[in-house]
Length: 74
Image 1 (cartoon, helix red, strand yellow):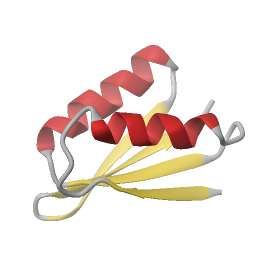
Image 2 (image 1 turned 135 degrees about the vertical axis):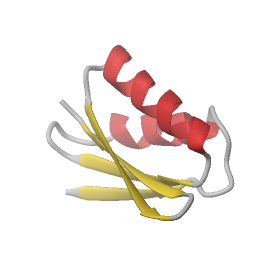
Image 3 (image 1 turned 90 degrees about the horizontal axis):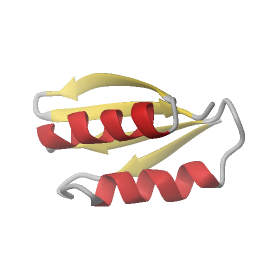
């Protein structure tokens, strides 16, 4: 199951906090798609979840200056 988080206009650590809250409620294998328009969030979000939890993260630029970060709970 996929869960969407709108983090447009929000700077770190807000996107990380929102994603952590949602991921804590999910089962293994479920994913969160976090949408952001802050390029700094790409590195901080993916680094946080891969290093702290070992979750798989993928980044897709969905339009110029807007990215979706997919985080899969393991």
